[in-house]
Image (tube, rainbow, N blue to C red; front, side):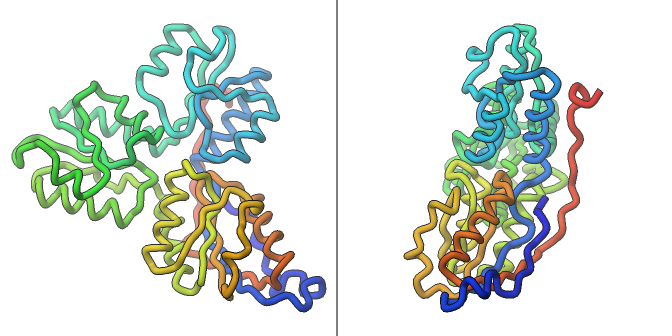
Amino acid sequence: MNAPFHTDAARGSDAAAGLPPLNLLIAAPRGFCAGVDRAIEIVEKALERYGAPVYVRHEIVHNKYVVEGLKAKGAIFVKELNEVPDDAPVVFSAHGVPKTVPAEAKRRQLLYVDATCPLVSKIHRQAERQIEKGRHIIFIGHEGHPEVIGTMGQVEPGQMTLVETIEDVDKLPFDSDEELAYLTQTTLSVDDTREVIEALEWRYPNISGPKAEDICYATSNRQAAVKELAHDCDLVLVIGAPNSSNSLRLVEVSERLGTPAKLIQRASEIDFAWLEGVQSLGLTAGASAPEILVREVVAALAERRTIHEKEITATVEKMVFKLPRQLTE
């Protein structure tokens, strides 16, 4: 959820006297989604309940600032379970994990907490149901992304095929009458995914799809907010990590509309040469970026320009996900 918005008509007008003006359009919604809020709170609650250290398999979310903050509280981030001592609690990241991971944790009798986003878990259950119906799954996603690895790891090898593009669809070896279903990664470009789905449905008219769109509400909403402001901007800054799929998609959405966009992790990464000739700047943040980083960027901009802020709201989010029972009972 976004922090209360600052509505200064001209930020620091006295201190900024003589600085060139900058219209700053800030997207809403932006930043943390319900799944990220939940995952971070799970690590914090685990530290409170079990004490430090708490191990976390992979980055809990794709944001260095968040990860470093949790490290300071006693979290230890590892790549695989074999790095976790037998007597230590471990949290699985929000992106989800293959079935083999909790199976190994159970075998070792590890105390583990699953922070997989509930919307990702929903896709895991959909995959199981499609396999039970005898269908081969075409999964639309980005190869190597943790969510893709986790989802493909819900079924046996050979039961799911990954595609990223329309060209990949053209290369699929299946006959048009085979029993097929498709599912998608939650953090994809809405527009790109629609095109891939259309290609699948054209080639395989009987392919089964999910009843509702798999791309999560937060991904869709943040892309919609960028679409709302990009046309009125000379440049858009997206706060997010280079390995954050949903943040990279925000850059692409802006560029597709003809507005240049730059991905930054912190205010320190801003190259102010980008702002030469820029009169209107768009600002948003991926679903793993906290609001404090948005305000940090605004403060850095205000040192060089007289800022006129305006929030552009595409929708209001009220989604909240419950914590696992083992942390609340």
